[in-house]
Length: 184
Image (cartoon, rainbow, N blue to C red):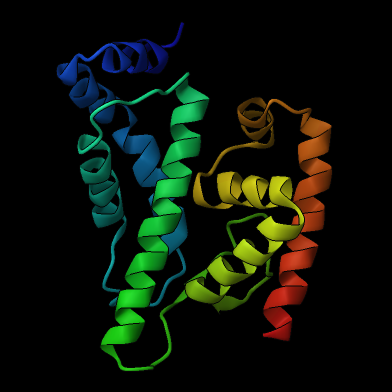
């Protein structure tokens, strides 16, 4: 059993110090995921990778009863929470500017989802929500791969499907999102 999985089980059992040991252990991988989100972002962006990870920690620290199954499940949940943090931040920024454009986020790292394009994270969130109503599994795959940084194999494990299915659905989801983003 991996150390992460063991700490998750201890945290699930109500040992709060396990949460702190876990967060120290996963800090660097989470920060690497966050850095990929900001790797090509314009300078002066108001949310930085460290702040994203710290906000994730705060949200996890507030959890009273956590039921993480294993390392992959933890990172899958982290992906969902990171998505919410990024979208909430973009929406706050947009509303602060009274209708100004939301900060674009480069996603070249996301295996060519939108090659060499910057986009509005709020628009992506809306498109991903639309995709989820039509193809929920594809939307979950995008969330895990894009926001969580999971590999094809890790995504397959988290969703309990084959890596071939993940690959096929990932390709279809990217094409659908590319069309939806270009249409808007």
